[in-house]
Length: 109
Length: 115
Image 1 (cartoon, one colour):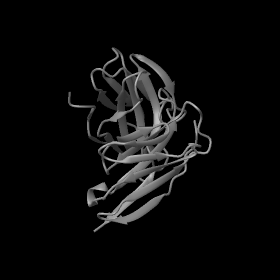
Image 2 (image 1 turned 120 degrees about the vertical axis):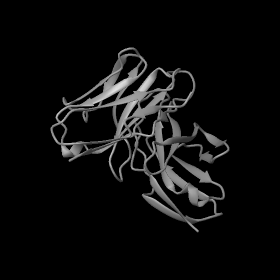
Image 3 (image 1 turned 90 degrees about the vertical axis):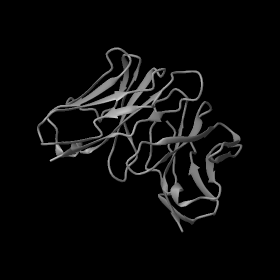
């Protein structure tokens, strides 16, 4: 399974756009990039998944450059309720899913 | 469908006692996963099932841990002779196998405190 590296923590302010970048230099051809969000005392929640270029849904956008060695999760106009831990995972669709430590995002008023 | 359900939500036990957690996945999901999470860490993979077959077990799953999914529906995770180091949140997740994106739906977890 490809190893991922992401910042341990980030701070931002309400109304700002937040970009969290994840490095996955050893990503394999069949690997997908998936992001999860976790609030305290809850299980992780799927946010978005992509293979290449850009994916957008109602929650976030995922930008993946051509070499796929990194990806950026973009959260538009964050609010206090976006304070959470965000996990970047890389693997084939049917792999067991291995989580790293994630990025603790703290939104300030 | 109410999503993935885990019971009990909280369990406090004394060292040496046995505990059992139950997970009811989303009904049409044939894959079921167990994870363990301690404070400040990401979820650690323990094991997963496809239907009733246990496909993989982590080295973290010592002999004191056993998971079952007898009829391919709900699953139980039993911890025998609990130790203080077993204190953690135990998370269950389910997903449909193959086909579309392998996206896990997690339950709210069962928090274990071993005194």
